[in-house]
Length: 251
Image (cartoon, rainbow, N blue to C red):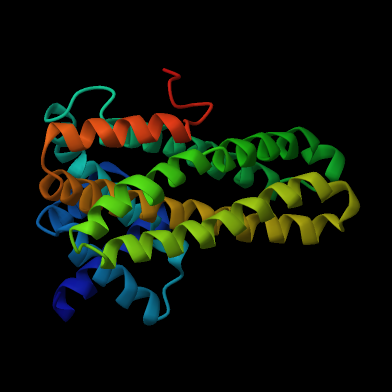
């Protein structure tokens, strides 16, 4: 990734964060990122953060890049059948992303309120969303104990190590969000708002970024590296033993 491209990314991000996504800026962003693969984007994101950009300010870039690659995800799903280990993981990601959209809106609404009583209904929503996001634990266990292990047997260890670390980090943040929602009535309201804003934004950005890397780097790599229907069938049986999320089979 060259400096010229990073500067272009910065300018587009400034516009995205200043005025939001409109057709003109979306087209500019799409044109910019359509030739960037996921690894290059991760490098660019890290460099932008090191240069002082707030991580949550990169969320629009991640959203736009997901739009560019949405057809790629569809292509992956056409290569496998419903019920395949990776197919189910991708479907669960779609649902988790919807939870994050809801969390973003509810947090924004809470930030506009002036008191606990005014925010009470929204705080209840935060609590339920935190429960849903925490309920993804079986999703992570199937990845860590089955998919990642099979990749590591094939000497693909770097991405899985990073994903495990991110699971641990995000797990703690999800628990913190739930704790905040359960103790809001015992906290000074402005302190609660600040903390829930910080934790929500951290989860939203980092979990979206995590899903992005799994969808577009790790899962395609696993389909390339793990060969043989018998192996995937055995992995599916082991996934069934671990179990699924409450939202896995919802439409």
